Image 1 (cartoon, one colour):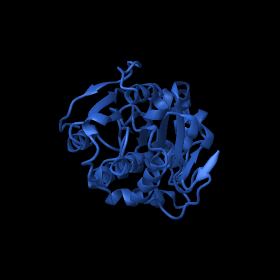
Image 2: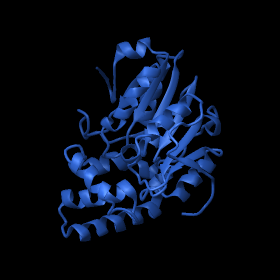
Image 3: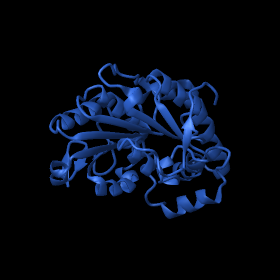
Image 4: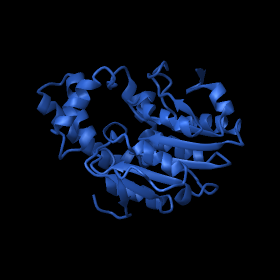
Amino acid sequence: MTEQGHLLFDADAVAAAGKVAVLVPGAHAAVSIFDPAEAWTREGYALVRYRFPGLDGRPVHPALDIAEAAREIADFAARYPDKELRLLGYSTGGAIVLDAAALIVGDLRVALMSSAVERGGGLQTGLRGAVDVAGAALRARSVDVRKVWLEYYRTLLFGRADRDNPAATRYIDDRLDEIVMPDEGKPRAHTDDLRRWTLPDLTGFDAAANSHLFVGLEDPVFSLAQTQALAQKLGGVAITGYPGHGHLLFLTEPRVFDDVLDFFEDRPFCSGAGHAVGAGNSD
């Protein structure tokens, strides 16, 4: 594998492929969250993964700079102007790929999974998160970071209403060694810049036609109302929602990767797992 800055890819596969998908995770998410996308290679895709500070062999400093990350992806894309480029951003990765879309010229489509919203949702998201973490500490009867984070992880998986779902215990037990802890400076390194982020000028990119939002309808981090507001500001981007799923959609509903691929290939979604969500202002 070639390591080029924050990017990790098979240089020979990229050179040979007609289609390239750049996969960008979010805070406390390693590139392994995109393992299901390996199936896309059967349809002619080469995969490029962006690595966050403190993960996948990268140092925790310097901290994430969304604009710089976008430029790195755009510079990579500029070296392959004849390829179909597809960007998938998860959570904070959504902000990165939108900034990148403003810089890229060519055949481009953008998928946003559990995407961050402007300024990371501001006070609204911050207060919800503080309440959820405090509740997790109470349920865990501990202030130990690991214990509280694992309890909070239940809310991230299925939302507030269904965090006691037995499947949450199974997901956590099966992936205990893979869960990234919010330690060693990662929280600030991953999220500080998001608090300042606003949508870029997308004049050269038709976001409404070439972007799509994929969200868990019980996402406790970015509410449906916040996602709908983002979609409207992008010009009316379509939203596919997955009932009963939270922020970690890549984990609890892996069929979302089939739907993302269908969107990239401009064909009807085949999984049947999600449904269209209209714009509006209700939580």
